[in-house]
Length: 128
Image 1 (tube, one colour):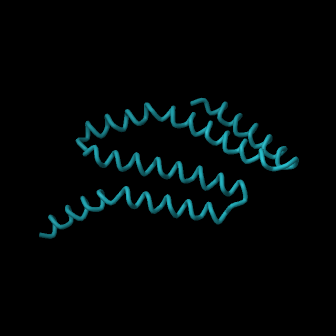
Image 2 (cartoon, one colour):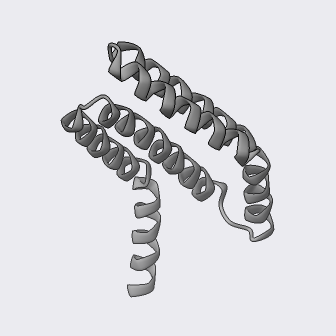
């Protein structure tokens, strides 16, 4: 990931979006969302080696792969939710952004249910 190119894309998109807002607003949102998706793609492609490393560390620590899967799913939901909510805020839809964030938080809780069950099972074993 080349941070300079990502920052450049962000600055150019912000400037272009600002100019387009003055002349008719409709294309401004498209530029903003396109730049966001392009930056997200660049970040996600650079995360591939990190995901491999996390898998290797989990194997060496003898951690159950289910826990790593839960962590990665929750992280993906958080990233997607934040991107969608910020895009809504950029277009002036703060109420929709709040609802998207609520849906993201709920999704993370649902993803973590198996983890909660495992923790409760461990607690039960320790108590009994």
